[in-house]
Length: 347
Ligand SMILES: NC(=O)C1=CN([C@@H]2O[C@H](COP(=O)(O)OP(=O)(O)OC[C@H]3O[C@@H](n4cnc5c(N)ncnc54)[C@H](OP(=O)(O)O)[C@@H]3O)[C@@H](O)[C@H]2O)C=CC1
Ligand SMILES: CCCCCCCCCCCCCCCC(=O)[C@@H](N)CO
Image (tube, rainbow, N blue to C red):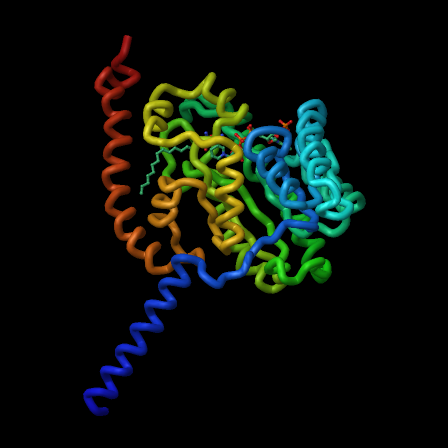
């Protein structure tokens, strides 16, 4: 090969590489991976906090929404807010609907019933976004077996049973014909909600990080199986959310947990919902709403597919190093407490 030929080849190859990097990092030319207008969406944990913000956002963008939680009063209040958003949309999205379903989703029969009920009222489910969850922070030694089971029921089973019912139903039927094929990918979605604390587990979340990390592992497993049925499976990783749940858990949160959380940035439910939706629409498997969670994801991404490959790989190197210092910093908070003496040395 002559000198000029190989130069042209290298120049061509670098241009293609640069273009590929640019499109993968900036999302240029990519279509919306999760349009919501006119589609049937179920949001769990939608009576308050992040779930309610997700339901309000999707309703504002024209989705038909079914909201699920246990407490009927809180559901009715959230339902009124969502209906107001739908009324404001006017005739922009024809026949937009909202339904309220009260169910304890940690019960497999109730979860199946809730899905059936939502489908009777809305039609076939296109998106299931599981937000129901919560934490009862404490030291592991202070938990009762019931406290530990509560963590698993509230965070793992409340998401897994309804996802199981939904994926079984979806896998047997084609997606509804898109009302506007130009609006983006018609793929159906199941979305879980984990936590930044599952990427970086720390003291005080002994009943919580297990189920939240399990949701992530399940996401990787189901994402692969659901390639068979053309269903996308995703899992969001918020940091602190300014929600009623956070206010409540802070009442009993151990002091060491609070100290470690000082390095986190609390976001509003609305910001978290919008940032996660943006990431889902750009095709992210593990959406995050903050830079901190994005850095933690880079350090823990493992075999999950990534978008923006180049930037994420660099970030992975950085995060791997930063994690050494984060862990040292967190441990030093705990070790300072230990200086007061081991339990059996204290009077
Ligand atoms: N707040 C935070 O700092 C963070 C939260 N997260 C996660 O984000 C999600 C949303 O959190 P947040 O906004 O604080 O939520 P909240 O704790 O404020 O609200 C939780 C929602 O889930 C519902 N829910 C709880 N258990 C069940 C159940 N068994 N069956 C049906 N519905 C249930 C609640 O309604 P009801 O009780 O009436 O059933 C409520 O609607 C959760 O999964 C949480 O773990 C992640 C990172 C940080
Ligand atoms: C590479 C660098 C990574 C750095 C990570 C450092 C993380 C420290 C703070 C994490 C705070 C997590 C809040 C989630 C709490 C939660 O899920 C509950 N409140 C739920 O209710």
